[in-house]
Length: 421
Image 1 (cartoon, rainbow, N blue to C red):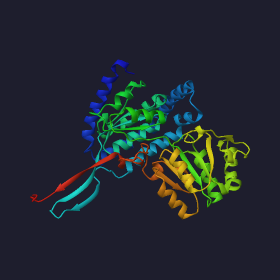
Image 2 (cartoon, helix red, strand yellow):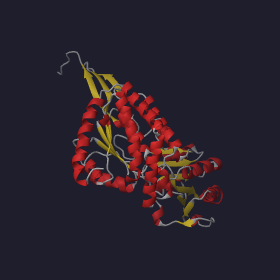
Image 3 (cartoon, rainbow, N blue to C red):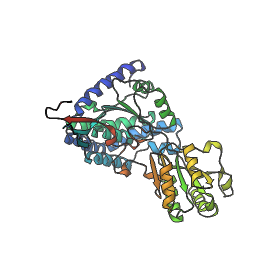
């Protein structure tokens, strides 16, 4: 690890190397990028024992820091997760290369032939917390889109990220691509993050992936443009026309499948006509599964609930907790989500097409769902192979950010001695 006094110089070195690599990647053949990712996937499986040993060090560090069980789950790697990481790399490798894709093409009356084509962004900085698999996902997606990337993983996943990064570098080497195409900041020191945020000459965009504190810091202090990945304050509204069986299945899956991911449900809004039927059944089922239900006054008669406080609305638990509130109608549900949501993912459970359409029209979350678990809020489940995050802003990228979203475009204009009158 570098001395703190060396961090500005070290980050500049990473930036210069990344910019040089990006210039080469901009025209790298699709076959080379595919070969690099396939070789990296092979390396991850071959070095599985090394990755698990590195992860054990991180798990010890996490326990010493007193991380919650949900955060420890995010940090943990086992054989199944390592296999999934390798499969994710292969999936990205097998995708169509977005670079050079013609987005639109037309002729002008002047005789000009114009094409709008995808082009790499250049150098991407990714700052993330806890989940070491982001090292593989982010590295793969940036490379697929012809970008160089500087990765700064969380202090908790320091050793795991290094082990995974070594596999990515091995893939680049075998494919004859510059090793600086995917770089990992080799220090836990937070000064490295501060440097990244101001490297306007070397980094074209920053992608923060983590909690409110990290994303807020990046948005406040970055001079480099940011793709914001805000917390997942995910709401599910149970409409008066909800199907009871679908509702039970979806809510339980959305809350309990994995509590530590950004698509996990955090707040349940229940139509007042369902309090004594579907609503009560769902809340009892959640409690039976071990979920702590922070209920408003209208639901506190249900045994096992906890009284909700003002802090429970708009809270991302990332744990076996959920807030629950009764609303008089769909418009009240929409107003609550507009007030407390994070524009990430929100869901309506209903058999009423008009209610679903109203929900979809009046909310502006990056992902809106009907009768489906919010745990599907994931690039892999959207057919993108993997994602670098769920962008909650409105400029450039929104929702799952896959390889295609990590490109810009340029106009290719052709004439035939054409001049302007």
